[in-house]
Image (cartoon, rainbow, N blue to C red; front, side, top):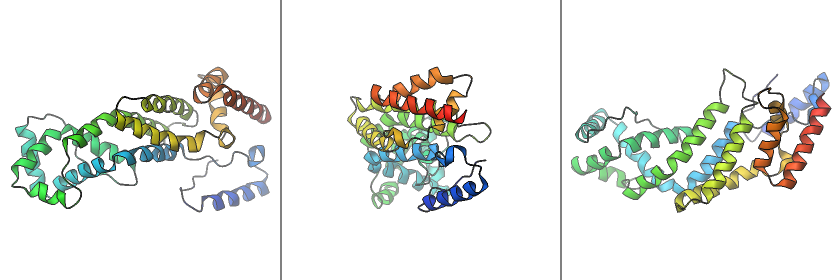
Length: 267
């Protein structure tokens, strides 16, 4: 049985209550050591949000530009006229995002970037209304803002796709996350060495948040690894390889031993 507890300050109290109840029913596996499994999609979200802080100004300007266009039918019609003049054939939709959901921020940036030239034309062709309104909220997107977003959007796309895969509701996801985790860990380390200063700073912020949840192997829920071992497509060989990709040799050996001991305890 799985019980989903919303991410809130009362989580710890809720988990302790559930643990006491399960203990009274004598249904806890391994004494409830692994009762609490953090939401992996939520951890991905926190990781990305930490990285996006480095580009808050650029994101805010582009977000406000999209909101201006979507705020009335007349403005949207004027914008679509600019799209036609620039002969942009993209079928992407200009959506509005929700501040608390980073994946919607990715979608708004991806859509806006496809219409970059239309936004530039709108600024020059609506009698100054576009610029006037946006100056109230942080300014019109500058070329540097567009370039910055274009540089880190491929990185966000990887996180976006990973979030969709681990958030699936029509298939089991417990044996999927380790593969995503390894890929993201390697990617972040690679991007920290990027020649693009903006991408490097973003990756550094992500690494800090990522390590908060995964660097201390004593705090990792080992059932994430057990689920992969029990997957006939992966098994123990893949799990050991994945652990060695995540950690240095000392931590990797320690974690592998813990996983094997836990597996034996279950059996």
